[in-house]
Image (cartoon, rainbow, N blue to C red; front, side, top):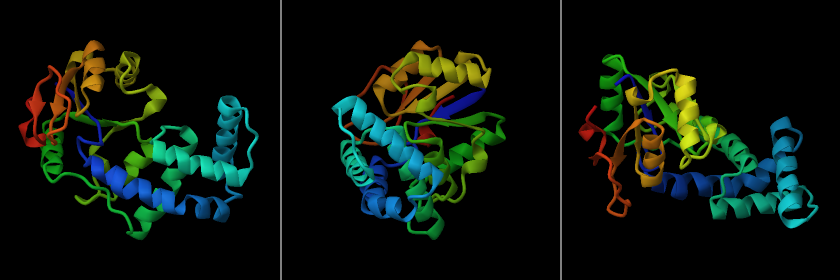
Length: 226
């Protein structure tokens, strides 16, 4: 084994953190943030992309305020839209920097990361959350700044997490044999796709409602066998 690739939500981090902390935080501040930073390039790009989607999907031409309403709707729907992810990342960055948010990381994660790093393994993250959101969760975490442990971060720019090609793209970028990469996730379909691409897999079963697959299982990072 040469490289460990981990999911975030449900694996290193409680699912409830994303839905009960991050989503409400961005929802409460979305419209105010758009108004306050309307001239920012990133905000304008996100609004234009939101308007483009509204036109393509609903044949509607919308203004900035309506784009804000649509973004709030997408938060409720947990839609993985690049415009939403971009703006959420900006809002969360302010929250992390001010200390209003600390990224939740399970206490068993840091000892495992230290051990793997000391043993010469490479470490990376693959999440449907943006690379920026990953940097924030691990950079301002309840366990301290964990960013130095990770050499690579991947998001849906390489493809969706239940698609085999996404993992093939990661393998190509890492330039490591697929069988030397271990992918950690709580989601059966993601693990199935990673295995089909040639990776080794382990399913994290931190909650009773996890849909089990035919992969090696661990209740936390201390039980992961390499």
